[in-house]
Image 1 (tube, rainbow, N blue to C red):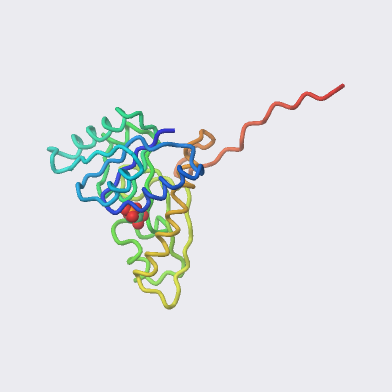
Image 2 (image 1 turned 45 degrees about the vertical axis):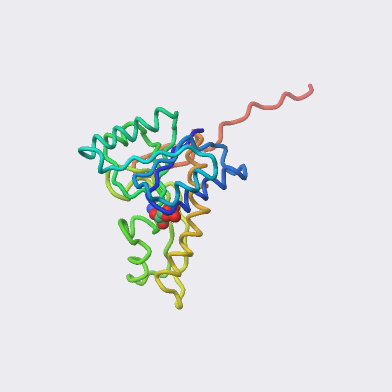
Length: 211
Ligand code: GRF
């Protein structure tokens, strides 16, 4: 399966996906990494892994829908089947999402629906939750609100700082994102309302037996 990864920054989740493919954990390839920022550190990670990159600054487009259409077209031109947002700091509208039905994933550093939006780890820390975490979800036009694919819990320690908690959540993200992508790569799932439900594997034909 061909993935397209969208980034805006350092790209550590992109790196986790690259590593999961290299280790055979994910039977996929990354057809393209696109950043809306020319200075995204993740671009160098892609180049090091011989993955084609593209910089598409959103400011160069007249409005959101025009940008979304151009982004979708760039991914389609490279045969991308599943889009993974990995720290992509732009809201995507229907002009993009409708081009990839149930095939756009995001990773968010909280146990959604708690703490959507920016600085989720800091929000969780300041709120005083005892269990924080990360979520892989399908992307809809509403921010951080799509159906949940998988989650990882990260305990908040008494001695934590917001930064220490964020670092532990990030480690959990790096394990969780490849797992979420693997779930969605096959066809044995469906979306029921807000729920992503995994289906049992198809029954194998019975082995012929002697007599
Ligand atoms: C991660 O915390 C991710 O959950 C959020 O943005 C951050 C991206 O980090 N959506 P990186 O660029 O993958 O290192």
